[in-house]
Amino acid sequence: MATAAPYRPMTPGEKKVIFASSLGTIFEWYDFYLYGSLAAIIAKQFFSGLDEGSAFIFALLAFAAGFIVRPFGAIFFGRLGDMIGRKYTFLVTIVIMGSSTFIVGILPNYATIGVAAPVILIALRMLQGLALGGEYGGAATYVAEHSPQGKRGAYTSWIQTTATLGLFLSLLVILGTRTLIGEAAFADWGWRVPFIASVALLAVSVWIRLGMNESPAFAKMKAEGKTSKAPLSESFGQWKNLKIVILALIGLTAGQAVVWYGGQFYSLFFLTQSLKVDGATANIYVAASLIIGTPFFILFGSLSDKIGRKPIIMAGCLLAALTYFPVFTALTKAANPALAEAQAKNKVIVTADNKECSFQFNPTGTVKFTSSCDIAKQVLAGSSVSYDNVDGPAGSVATIKIGETVISSYASKGLPAAEAKAKDATFKKAVADDLKAAGYPIKADMAKVDTVMVIALLTYLVILVTMVYGPIAAMLVELFPTRIRYTSMSLPYHIGNGWFGGLLPTTAFAIVAQTGNMYNGLWYPIVVAGMTFVVGTLFVKETKDVDIYAND
Image 1: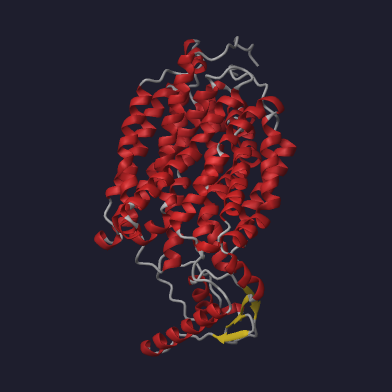
Image 2: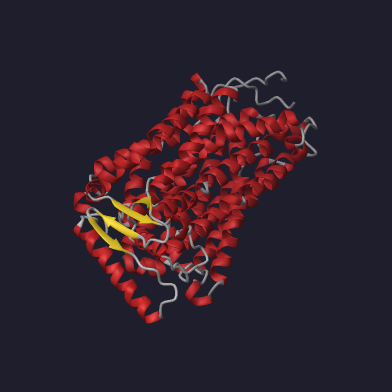
C-alpha cells in the first residue's frame, strides 16, 4: 500500500460538508421508505383488482422492484462516481429520487386508469431504486474520504443513521397527516400528502448538494492522474478485486441486510398483518424504538474504531439468528395476548391431501382456488390465522380443526355459481364463528397491549440493526482502493441490501402464505444471517487500520 497521507482533525468546513451529505441522504431515504410504510394502503389503491392477500404481497413485490434494480444503479452511478467525482453523481441521484416520489403522489389509482396505474407505479419504484443504487456508495465513500485516520467508523456511522432517520421521518409525516385528517380521509387521499410534500425536501437537498466540495481523496487522485479509466473492468474483471466483492457480499452485506430489514420493516409488517395491530399504533411503536435505538449507530461505529468492524457485525448476525424466533414469539404475546393465548390453547390444523394443495400466492388474481384444501387455507389466510398442516388420505376432503372442533371444507369445481357462493358463505361463517369461540381475535385489543414490552422488543431488534449497520460503511470503504472504491463497494452493498434485504418482506410473507405458520417467514433472515456469520468469521479480514489513501 502507498504511504498514508498525514491525517489531522476535521475542520469545521469539512464537518459541515459531511453534515450536508448526511442530511441529503436522510431526505433520499425518506422518499424511498414512504412506499414501504404505506404498503397496505398502496395495495388497495393500485392492486385493488386482486384478492386482499395477493394484493398485499404484490404491493410488496412492487416495493421490492426498487430493490431489485439497485445493483444496476450501483454499477452505473458507481462508474460515474469513480470517473468524474462523488459530488456531481450526488446531484443526479437526488433529482431522480425526488421526482419519482413526487409523481407517485399524483399518480391516478387502479380505479381511475386501470392496469396502467400499477405498471407506472412499478416503473417509478425502479427509478427510485436506480437512484438509491448510486446514492449510498457515494455518500459512504464521500464521508469516509473526509474522515481522519482512527475516526472513520465514528464519522461514517452518521451516514448509517440516515436510513433509520429517513424511515423515522416518513413515519412521522404519515402519523401527522393521519392525525390531522383522520383515518378515512388518509386511506382515501391523504396518503398522497407525504409523497407530494417530498418536493420540498428535493429542493432543500439539491440546494445542500450544490454547496458541497469534492472529497479530498478523489481530488488528490485526480490531480495525480490516477483515476480509473475502466472502473467496471478493474472492479469485476480482475480476480483480486472480484474475490473481495464476493466476500463482501456473502460475508458482510447479505447478513447485514436481512437483519436491517428484519428489525425495521418486517417487524412493522408483522405487527400490522400478523398481529392485527392498527397501522397508526404500529407506526408509533416502531418510531419509538427508532428514537431509542438510533444513537447505537454512533456507539457501535465509534467502538469499531477501537476493537474492529468485523467482531461487531458478526455478533449482530449471530444474535439475530439465535434470537429471532423467541423475540417474535414474545412480540405476539405482548402485542396481541389474546391471539397468543388462542394459539396455545386451541391450535388450528388443516388436514388435507397434499396433492390437491396449491401454492397460496396468487399475484395476478387469475387463479381460482377450487380444491377443498386451497379453499380452507385461503379462508384462514384471509383471517391471518396461523395453522399447522397434516397430510390427509388421498382424495379426502380437507378439514379445519380449531381446538376440538372440526369443520369440513368443500370443493367448488363444477358447482353452479349460486351453489358455490352459498357454500362459501356457510363455510366462512362456520370458520369465523369457531375462531371467535376459540378466542381468536379479529384485531388486537389495544387495552391489553403491553406497550412497554412491545417497544422494548422492537428496540432490541433495532439495536441488532445498529450492530450490523453502524460499522459496515467504514468496512466496505476500507476493503477497496480509492480508484475503484465507489464502484466496488456499491455493488455488494446493493445486491446485499437490494436483493437479500429488499426481498425479505415479500419472501417471508410468501413462506407464511404457503406454510400457514406466521413465524416460518423468519427462517429466511435466520439462514442468511447465519451464512454471513460463518463466511465473514472465516474469510473476511479486519480493515480498521487500512490506509484508504492507497490508490493501488
